[in-house]
Image 1 (cartoon, rainbow, N blue to C red):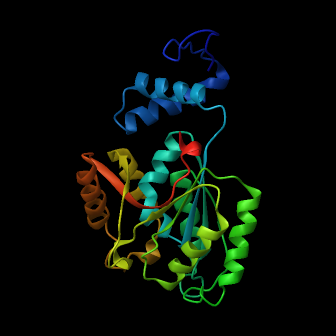
Image 2: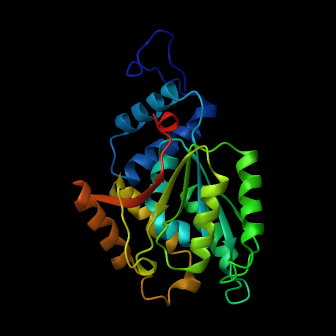
Length: 256
């Protein structure tokens, strides 16, 4: 894929070569799967490349495997689509109770297109391990500069989630921090940031969550519930769908 010097983003020129043929096929498949016009998809891709000399990076802090997908799976899908690199840290896989969770998280990650790592903290004992969790977050924040970090809301009542968010505020001082909602853990929540989503993003979220066979016994783990939440948030934004977030901290110069 090349474009002529001096041309506007809309005036792009595509050269089809053997090397590009696979990418072209994937473009056509993506457009068909998402019911998009291929010209629009190509234009957005090229314009994104021209506008962004550096790739933006987002980090999702997931106290347990599946929290990231539950809280912001649609947003992750949208960021990946727009060219962001998204990394997820799962702090605990509850391997002693669910031996397949690590594999399920890996399969989910493949669908969303993220990179991820799984740490070995013990579920429900995060308050005991608070200093070690802070150190892990601090070390990670020193190794990579993120534009955006997602973490559970500050009103999340799960003790593990509360620790991760409290320490994230200390470790990530130089970037935007948004809290994702997990309704069953929030008796009250103030959502003042909404990310509009389309059906294709919701489908990715649901496909990713469908990988978690070990969690399907939970009462909230159903497509009907997932869709009800993103539909409700979408109505609040006059959008087909949306995910809502608590604005913990915003650094505007990194997002503009």
